[in-house]
Length: 272
Ligand SMILES: *[C@@H]1O[C@H](CO)[C@@H](O)[C@H](O)[C@H]1NC(C)=O
Ligand SMILES: *[C@@H]1O[C@H](CO)[C@@H](O)[C@H](O)[C@H]1NC(C)=O
Ligand SMILES: *[C@@H]1O[C@H](CO)[C@@H](O)[C@H](O)[C@H]1NC(C)=O
Image (cartoon, rainbow, N blue to C red; front, side, top):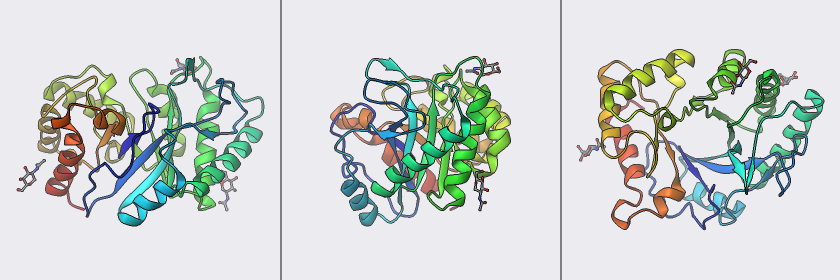
């Protein structure tokens, strides 16, 4: 799965190479509970991903590749210059109802299959996060609005995500832990970190992740790390990449290198 559209650059689904025989999830970044100035809207989400990622574009890539799914990622780090954060709703039930209604509309309009949860900043008291997000996912799933839900913790946000996962793990399909925030740059360190994250969250749902032109382990060492994980008995049930925006604008010889190689890796080495 790969994030797309967070930078506002004119990225497209079509330029991403997609192989058959394996699911490819595009994670549209981001749907945000805020107006354009960043003011919270009590659960009323709006899409803020790159305007090139239209509803027709989602429909087109899904009809061209039946193995493509598309998710809306909730929140992200910032909107313009405003840092986004989880906030305690005045009334949890109203927040959940507003979130359900606004996301259902976005999901239907854009032909999406699910949501990803990517809140990155939390207040000291964040107990409402687990309840509101867990109930929201449960409700979206039991009304068949979505079929996939993923969460995206990073180094400093594991506590609220573990609370969410402990209470609502049954409705969460994958954990896109942001390993590139963990300052691990070697295969050995990646293995130890993966061991830690799979104890925090149910092992088989945690996906290894890679930031293109970014932090953490870089280059082919990432694929070496994946082999080391497998040699140590871990299942690799997918890979999360961040992001299409980075890949589309990287050095010409490296464009979509990690997308192609990740899909080859999963097709070569995992039982589907
Ligand atoms: C979330 O709440 C817990 C319990 O109050 C607290 O320990 C933690 O620092 C809070 N924030 C984050 C980002 O974990
Ligand atoms: C769907 O999920 C919501 C939120 O947890 C719950 O209130 C409701 O009872 C569930 N409905 C069904 C039919 O399971
Ligand atoms: C996958 O297998 C093919 C054929 O054996 C090989 O050429 C390719 O390098 C492998 N790719 C990865 C990422 O393991």
